[in-house]
Length: 112
Image (tube, rainbow, N blue to C red):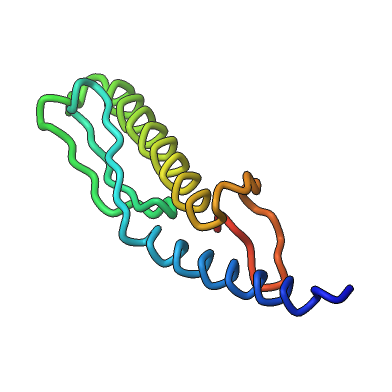
């Protein structure tokens, strides 16, 4: 094990890259839409909802379930885009090593 120092250095570099990538996730925003843009949800790549826009024409007091479905669809679209952005950023940080989200390292969890 004469290269243990080299492995430790690589692990520290990886930790720094992952930490920087996680910080970038706060700045990346994605928009999920439903109903041809009647409902829009802006979310960070970490999955935090930042904004929601509902066109007035989507609000029908007689049929609230339509708006409910549109909100769910926009949220799911934003969540999928958020997860895709997160995977891309973390893959770039790990040099394409293909590590799955949630993998435990001594210095924290990727993907959270």
